[in-house]
Image 1 (cartoon, rainbow, N blue to C red):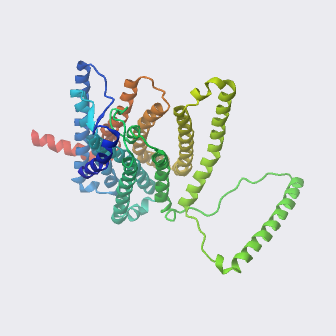
Image 2: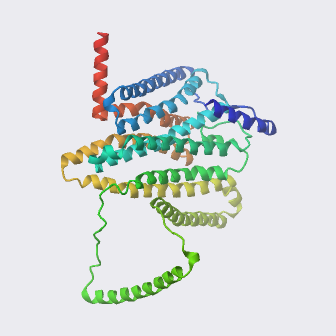
Image 3: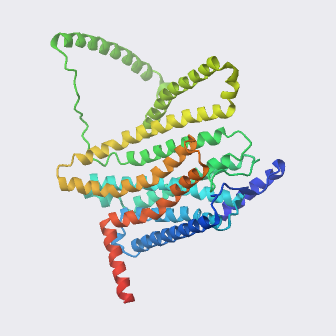
Length: 458
């Protein structure tokens, strides 16, 4: 934390005199009257105390019970650690603003806060991904679970999660800190990368592209984790096909067409084989890993959908030029154009990301629904239920907050500030409670621990 603060100070001090900006930033704040600010401060303080207590108690319970030293709970340890990081870099700042209403923050502290908020958000995605992998192995390979999720494999997974997380966020903020700053007013109640980019007086295209692509990159990384275990699972190599259901006379015509097609294919490909075999300069390997294939398919679909969206945006531009020629330059201003282009690419990437997430996750759900025994099927769903609740808890508030903010669907600044704050503060508090209630082994250990504490105090 101190290192990132020192780096921010050194980089930005050289440009502060050029653009005549102060080292302190002005924040949006909450705009509450004193009596409501005190109530909000008490609520935030209680929320922070609950987060500290629940997550620390969850850590203590898992660490001090050898029966919980299993892959599932070792991976779970990363969630309360991550929640403590996210809440600690946010709640003290919120409580200070509510109590003193200073609405200022040194730029270096703002950068540090934004860095750890993004570390918190991204590590939640990665940790939930590896926990989904753990549950997948537990359901599909229960007899080999302990062999697959060995201590060495577990250490590699956790190390990869945190190293990848810190590297991606470090690159994000290196790209931010290289740009000169000429403004000092933040539109958010706390610091994050989008609000800090609004302070920059330079081209942020690289930053925007990196921010857009980081989601796709995270998906590719999670796909690599899943694809690395493809040889573990007993999947038959034969598939059942639908067929053509043609009458005999049409089947003959189709057969002749297919035969001619096959002859052409044989000739062309045989000629290609002959060319490659007889040219030593072409004797090089050409393979495609599953992750690369998924990436290629993702961007092919991005290309196809973006063509539709871009043509639609261009049609809108021509419509304005024809129907509103006198107001064309006003309507199609630089700000409006930036919003249109951003909306096109954000919508495109979001739709494609959802499509490929469903594509890669649906077979797992189908596999669970095909379990013959009802009791085993319910046990499998119960195993996934807690994880699904956590995924919804992390993703839905953040998704709602940023969609409302980017599309300007919330006109009230105070309402948007409240939504943005809730999206970051609620998950760390509810997360340990959900896992404690929905996980039988963990719940039993907590009850026993509380029982021993009560007896000792009595």
